[in-house]
Image (cartoon, rainbow, N blue to C red):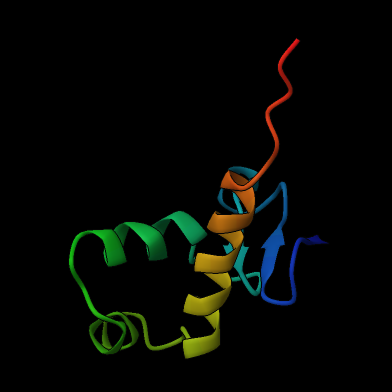
Length: 74
């Protein structure tokens, strides 16, 4: 298992190697999709009881870090 951040892990044997929360079968994309569909943090935590508030923060930070990269022009 590879730790991408303190709460985001990647394990080739888990969820097809997609980034997950703390080695569980909760993918970062699941958290982001539920937030994007309109669930607020409390609803998300109710929906996924194993999830913690810091996991939501880590998911958002992870997504931000993946989008914030320089694009080199030739």
